Length: 104
Image 1 (tube, rainbow, N blue to C red):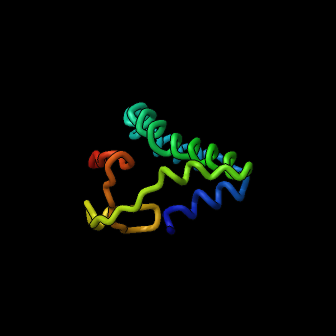
Image 2 (spheres, helix red, strand yellow):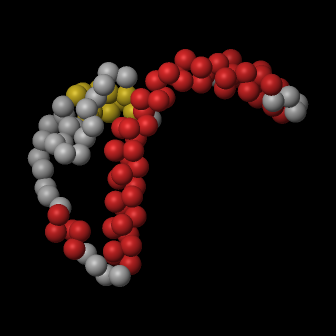
């Protein structure tokens, strides 16, 4: 964390340039990959968020018909010790719901 102290100190002193340079350096290597992230993001998280919105709208009118589409599945991890936002976690591949892991 000490490496970030100069960025914080510069920002606190009113100098945004070091942080902007850091952001630019962080974005540059991922820029070519970012174009390939759009389709999986639209098909996965964005689509799920839209479905959630539709379900919430339905529930606001006491319409629970989407619940009839629910299923129960028992499975084991398809990949152990993957990385997540808060550390390590297991992954579960569920047909029709999980996008394939691309090794990123």
